[in-house]
Length: 85
Image (cartoon, rainbow, N blue to C red; front, side):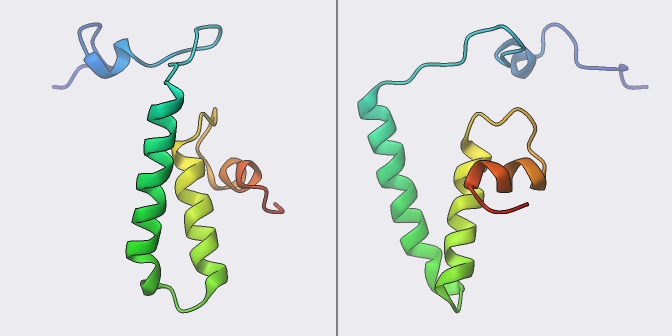
């Protein structure tokens, strides 16, 4: 049988910030690199979307997935991206 929940030795659990814990801080250079790499990704896969509107939604969705949103459900991701819910 599997354990009821993640063990205390689970490395993923160790780095997950909870309420009241500080978020990870990155440098401005790292943020610019991430932004540039994401733009390259969006340019690379953008041709799979026939129109510009779905392409922009995909971009907003991916950015919201990577953002520090407390709960990653469609409602909160759309809200973070600035779309009407």
